Length: 81
Image 1 (cartoon, rainbow, N blue to C red):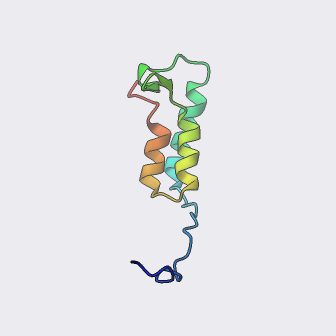
Image 2 (cartoon, rainbow, N blue to C red):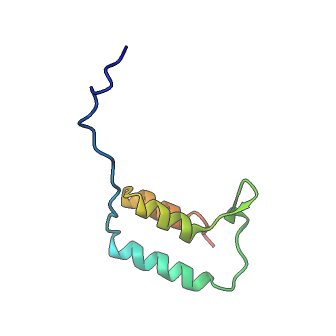
């Protein structure tokens, strides 16, 4: 049987936001501004649910994930066109 106090020194993980490179911040903002009012790509749906790249990117950012993962979350909605 495991000792209940054997892991008493564990601390909760607290996410910290990482700073995104400025060039990627600008790229994301430019894409958001350019795409306002435009029809969304069919890629904007995941499992038939509308993909909200802003919300996904913000959530990944709040979890303190590496910047390239956060940027991928923001950019998932946009295709090459």
